[in-house]
Length: 427
Image 1 (cartoon, rainbow, N blue to C red):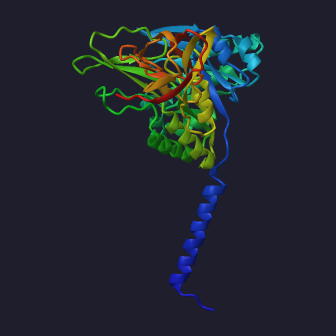
Image 2: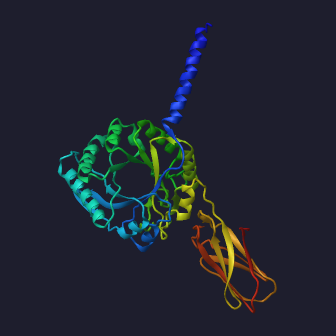
Image 3: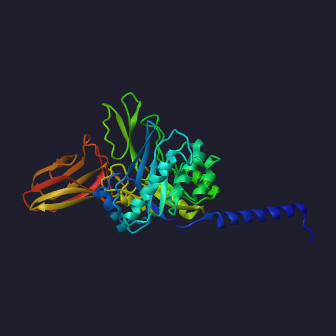
């Protein structure tokens, strides 16, 4: 039976297409859940940090900031972090150490004094961990390297790797590095890296669009990294900034967690945090389909109870499961003494709840003796109910997951049954 040439070529094209699709799905793609780790980037291990490092957090590993190197005025300066290794041992998961290296304008060489100092400092950090009873799973180098100097950076990594052996040395990479001709060799030499897809470009105005992680650009970077073929993890953000512009509309600066900044009079300040819904969507997408060499997610950074510009743990755990976190404001009335009641506002959800609602507390009869709003709230009192809402001057804008705030108190002539509900704010 003869087949026309056109049909013959068509059958070949179909076969090649099916084969390519099979290769893409079966050999270069992966699906299913991935290991999820967290950075512990605090420089001071407070009780809150120790409590956050927990075996119940669902992280498969922690990567802990262990030391920082800076080059102020060309001078080498190394500082180590006093890590609480007892807390890490109680967490009972693998621990990696991170060495942060600031911007460097000098030359790169594997045998220059700077490379030797970095290698020796890295080895001392690993020795500290081992002496404390923790065997590091990796040493991760986080260096602000210019895109054009990756070949020079490799000489540093080679020197550190030799000194750190047998501990594996990895590094953080920026999406812009992926297109540099030196990057594949750098990645293959290390055998793995962390692709950091979060950053903040300087905004043009207080109302300009701002994001810490663009999902479209992130997906593109992941596919580009997949084509290189070296195993990598992706670092996703949980943190935020305060962004300030002065009264004339000029950029004033950023404030991160722990910053003590006094803005000038009339400054406009905007709170910008990583978007939990967008990050959850990325987790869902990658669970369904991702490059095979994408081997995990690492969150920057571990939520701590006294953070002001970071997600709460409940939010992160929802996102880790690929679920969009949602707020849930509820009102409760608690009797504290005979005939004395507190009205409380609670967030029973797993995302920050905007305080754009009011609480209406009702009772029967006219036995109210006194009442007042507290904690940054104001009250409208009526014969058989009060309406409580945030005052414009309070500065309150959200309630964290699990947060509870007493917003008013009521004193009656006798015990009463009081009911409270959350409702939209009415004029």
